[in-house]
Amino acid sequence: MYYNQSCAAKGNTYGNPAKAGFIRSMQRAAVNIYKTGNSYEMLVFAPGRIKEHFHLDVNGNELTVSYSPPEGFPRPEWVLREYSRGGFRRVFTLDESIDTTNITAKYADGVLQVSLPVIAGKEEVKKEIVIN
Image 1 (cartoon, helix red, strand yellow):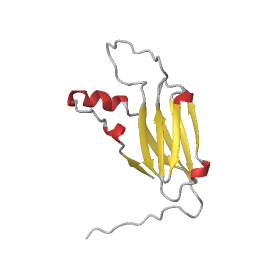
Image 2: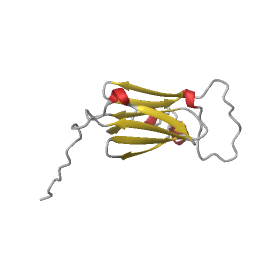
Image 3: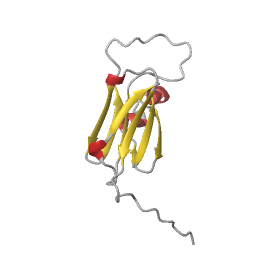
Image 4: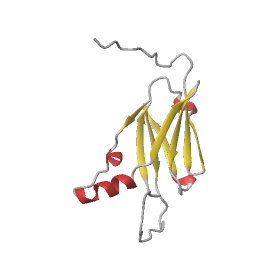
């Protein structure tokens, strides 16, 4: 499984470099991925979101995880802001070992957990490369 940088993940500033850091933080959510014996587990850290506004889509070998805040979402005038509850979009490339028909997700305690089951016998073989 691999991560693709989408336009949103790169923080497209639409011609305004002064907004680069702001827009990038608004469109990203931290992700950790670990492997178990029979799956990859993806943890998307997204506190303060509403479960029904997450979207997960598989198109070919790409998994897109996104969030769109509801209309009328309050936008206070921040004094200090270290994380965003706004929208984001992350794209990941899935290899042929992932069983895309059985991907599951749950959202609890501010973390979206996506379970990506591995098809038995399709795991990538690890090969060590000797450095000469």
